[in-house]
Length: 205
Ligand SMILES: Cc1cc2nc3c(=O)[nH]c(=O)nc-3n(C[C@H](O)[C@H](O)[C@H](O)COP(=O)(O)O)c2cc1C
Image (cartoon, rainbow, N blue to C red):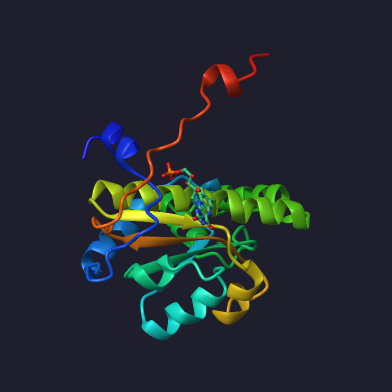
């Protein structure tokens, strides 16, 4: 699908067709396309929990202000950011070492820079996890749209509750959740509300 069309057609779809599943391979395609999103040092400090089963959906519903789409949509993704993703334990560093032809010095330099930039305060760690995770989230929604799959992002949720309920450790942060599936055509979607444009939001200096 042409990119412009993807932007035009993506909507936050409040009503999902309860009778239409999302093919597992299609979900994989969406995620594998979305991970082309940029990330700091290409560290990809993110993971996704795909909530698919009835039981998991019900657990998530309670922590999502009872937003029905969590139940109606075939899948809801919990997008998780890793506050420690700059750390040497991230497997991306090993890939970088290989890509750089075994140049240890270059990788150690990058590791030091990343640790300084993203690991020296709680605020930096959180910004690192949430900014990169946010880009993945947007990328997921556009990737889904490009395959004709509708989405709905949610941050009206209990972030800490979800973190506990789904067994995420302290270094992880729930960025948002995204319901995926197909719009229930029996419902009507309110028209897209206008956006503030360049003249409203850009300050040239
Ligand atoms: C980070 C984020 C969190 C959101 N959280 C919720 C939510 O919890 N519940 C909801 O109904 N809509 C939520 N929305 C959807 C917005 O209301 C919607 O994106 C906005 O009104 C623009 O509509 P559109 O996405 O159809 O263009 C959220 C959107 C974003 C980007």
